Image (cartoon, rainbow, N blue to C red):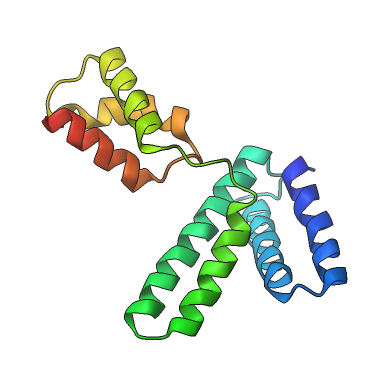
Length: 151
């Protein structure tokens, strides 16, 4: 079993003992998402830590989007609940790249691929995605690459 999944289970037990309802609800949801991913496909399998991080990243993104939707609909209480859940999930994710770090990686990838102009974005993304996996959202990475290639 992956170390991250073990940590989630241990934190769930600790949160239940502490009666922290937000953490219990969020960690249960995260473990359920991991379990669904494990049994998806043709046969059940154990997820690696990297795969668990991808699942948690996807769940955190769902929380952020739901929060924005609730806030836009004037439902501040539900929006805050989603943000609270997102904060719990982010404790298990690697630290996000700063704008400077992301721009430096983008510049390296552009130099490595020799890309010029916006049409070469795919080449740069192919090199860049493994380097930033889990540490920057895809839309943010694409925006940085697009800005660098069109400049």
